[in-house]
Amino acid sequence: MNLPDHFLQTIHGTFGEVGRRWLADLPMLIDECARRWSLTVLSPVENLSYNYVAPAVSEDGTAVMLKIGVPRDELHTEMASLELCNGSGAVKLLTSDPEWGVLLLERLQPGTSLVEMFPHHDGKATRIAAAVMREFWQPVPHDHAFPTVYDWSFGMKRLRQAFNGGVGPFPERLVEQAEALFAELLPSMDDVVVLHGDLHHDNILSAGQDSWLAIDPKGVIGEPAYEAGALLRNPLPAVYSFPNLHQLCARRVDILAETLGLDRQRLIGWGIAQAVLSSWWDFEDNGEWRNGLLIADALSSAYV
Image 1 (cartoon, rainbow, N blue to C red):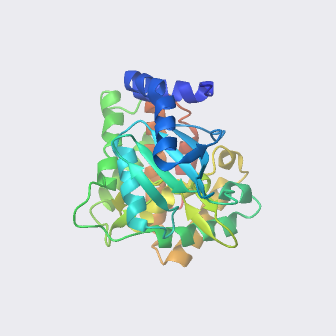
Image 2: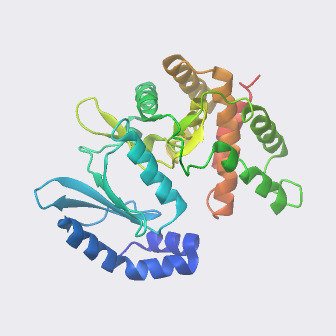
């Protein structure tokens, strides 16, 4: 089975020995999914990252997507959030197997992403994203295993621990601002819902005439304003070469505040805090971590 080198490296680097065993079992898993659900599985998508994703066709000719990942909490909360949405603002989950880490999804067609609208139609893309957010958000169920944005914020503590209380190569001003924002915004959240958690341009696909749906939700509990963070620092890497990031971010915040009725300062505050946190996560994963700080810096001057 020929898989891209970058995919193999990502699985090895992220999951270690568990990932190596999963890769060895992957052909068997694909065959078993094809047998169980009577699928003809086609070649995988080109941009494989942390999961194996391939289009497939069911016995009755229905176009579907097969997604297989190393079984983990993140996949399980994705399944749970898609079940909760039940097609509202998100791709429909047809069936799943948490033990195997398998999701069978409807295939969105034509399936182009919001990335194609950047930068010339960024305002339109932001309004589409806002509409998808509104459809996706769901009340928090009584019994759930979703993490909270409070849980996610602990990454900032790991940053300090990694550098013996310091900030290492990170700008101290931005780290301190992010810490202060988490301390201010977390306890003052109101009307929390189940958020997507990673709703950016690559994760919003066209599903027909004027129809757009989210894919790949993380599933996290927080206030609606938190959801804007991923959108503000995307699409990657194109957003970082935009000639006026301050203006771009301000325009997006204005659109989201107006369209969704959200507080502009909370949108900006969450955008800063998440940009720094995301940079730290990238640092932990040995990825390109400096770019996210450009968004934090672009937003910081607008927070009062």
